[in-house]
Image (cartoon, rainbow, N blue to C red):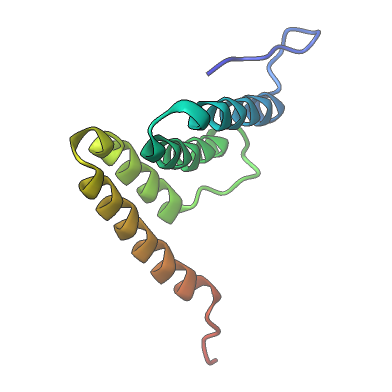
Length: 112
């Protein structure tokens, strides 16, 4: 990733990350116009993966074990699109199931 320096040549990690992430999303949006249709999905998965980089930018952001594990899975399977469309879609579907289960754990009220 790019590193943007302030006037005093010190890195402002979070602001740089946010600018670079928005640039990634913008170039992905433009690329999606001309690329094969599943590349847009691949870029979105890459975007999820890049979000986990925020954990290394600030001590104020507590790392989320679920998101870090999802990132590992994404990194391991991002090339599935090159193998077959069906395999790639199955991978996305499996992530959706995991995220749904995690959402239920996080947001379902538990009796006290």
